[in-house]
Image (tube, rainbow, N blue to C red; front, side):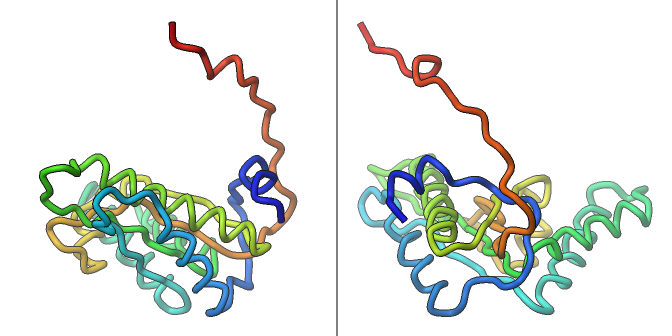
Length: 185
C-alpha cells in the first residue's frame, strides 16, 4: 500500500472480528509504533497486549471501576462495561511513561505516546486489519490503571482495539484544506 494513500484513507472500525494480527505482524506494528517522534529518546511509552481470557478479565476490571465511580450503577450497565473489551480479538493498551526531564515536558511525552498509538493504527491498517482508538472513563480511572499494573508516573493514552473489519468502512467526509490551513501573515 502506498504510504500517502494509507495516511489519507485510514478509517477507524467500530466493528471488529477475528483474526487479529499474527505475532510476526504484531512485531511489524510495534516497530512502526516505536518510530514515534521522541524528543531526547526518552521512549515515553510502553504497550500491553490483551487477548483471549484477558479480554474478559479487562471487562471485569472495567465493571469494578464503574462500580467504584458510581456505586448505584445497575447490573445492565455493569454488564455493558464487562462486554466492552470483547468487541475485538486484541486490545493494545498504549501507556505514557512520564519521566522528569529538563527539556522534555510532560505534554511532549504524552504526545509521543499518542503518536505511537497512531503508528499502531496505521501499521494495523497497512497490514490489512482494522482498529479503533478508545478512551472513555476507564482510560483515566486510577482503579483501571492499578489493575493493569501501571506505575505512578504512567497513564493510559488509549485502548487500541484491533482485529479484522466486520462490515464496510464508514464513509468519511471530504475535508477542504482551506477550512483548516491558513498562511500566517
